[in-house]
Image 1: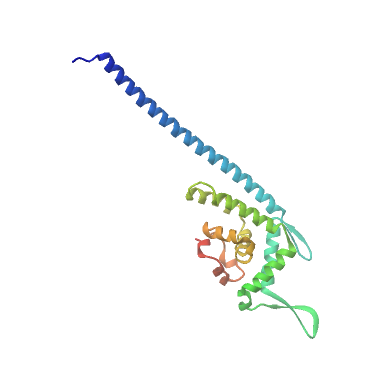
Image 2: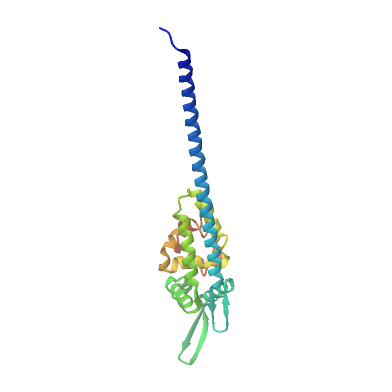
Length: 221
């Protein structure tokens, strides 16, 4: 029996061509996937940076009004924090012999009390701070946006650092108290604990050192 060498050559060439086409198709698909992932990442980051810009705008609009003055933005957050701390340090009271309010230093036990802290928080935020809640709602939306994305954990963690880097020292202190005192922000508390968003907090600046136990240690790790 004899074989046509030309037929054998064409079969070999056809097999090689098929293999080359398969490899080319694989490379094309792989490159297309890489391009899609890169485009997805770029779109996500562009949207994230836009959200962070808007968050800064909301932050700059927060107003705090006390008896004598109105402060805005970072100054507003700082004024609110100083007033909150003062309310927790100093108690106003009246006695039977004097109709005017007098001041006395609160006890350590009083400053540890979560009910007193809760009351002073709401009195201050609801009566004196404008757009304070809107700011933390915006912050929550951004954190959720990252948390629910399809990126791997390490990428999400990196994106969370973009958020953390935008928070001032006072913002982080307020973030702690809004998580532990405000039931409207239970989702924010969960995500703060999940992503350790309080790791940059100066714990010694809390109203009382015992307050640190009001949230999971995961928030700081």
